[in-house]
Image 1 (cartoon, rainbow, N blue to C red):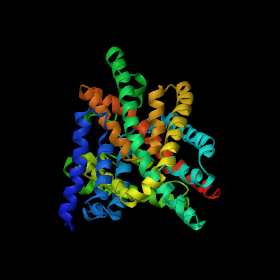
Image 2 (tube, rainbow, N blue to C red):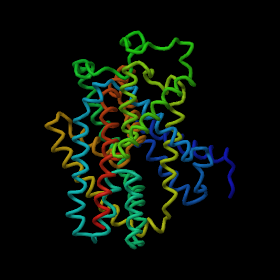
Image 3 (cartoon, rainbow, N blue to C red):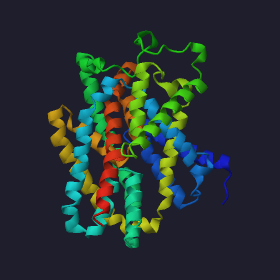
Image 4 (tube, one colour):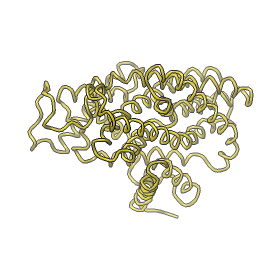
Length: 397
């Protein structure tokens, strides 16, 4: 059945819409990304064309622009102090990844052969880049029967990560809000600055703000994409050793502190939710690469290794998080970002904050605490750690 571009766009938006409705009805116990992912998977296996997301205008070109814009924008939500303060989330997330490898490379090897475990572990610790690296490595070694395993692992592990992360964040959110209602806001949070400062309370910055008449969408988008391009150039100077999108986040913080970028830039430009929707659709389009038969043939090792990996994450994050002042739920949620990364970490966290908080003040307070930890955790695991691990594991095939 042939679909027009408009019909493809309608299908994509319908799947995202149903996800949001279910999330709201269940008070974020079932996150929207989980429902949307299931709908896309079923759709690809039935009537939806494999290129539905591309036809809906969310292809690679869109993503190249959207990722840079979004990550610079997320930097404009944080102060430099707030970003630096997330070193604890970095430690917890990295230790969580180590917990994955500890169990898959020990218990996992007792249950499955060497190549299966080595091929599946890197994508379990991160995102699509690690999965593609391992898949190509298996083909180069002539192990074509397992070439689909890393991609299937990447697709499957997020289905486990979404609901568990939502549950952890809801429990942590209720704990934080209870303390907020009884004792008021934590001075440490206020000291780091809020993501929702009113314009009247903005600090004086090195570069004065543009007059209101010039704070239009084209002007804001021009400045944000310029910072994104600078991040790309800096990443190239390091030979790609420092991920471009990590630099985007850092430069977003710095240029906002200087005054070149407006706080909450893309919200003011009116395009933030549109870009998030397109990016989510593109992430879900990866589900089109695995057939039911392929998934059925390797689902056993995948599920067992995912369970081992999640157990390893829980143990390590709990052991490391407690001395750093994280509850076991918060530490576990930080580690779980390895199973999906951005933008799912942003979407799940904001959904939970909306459902747990009763007022805008409470919701904003939750976002100030939870979102920086989740974003930084996701970048460390998916964008950095998983790629390093995949590079090492390629030599073990």
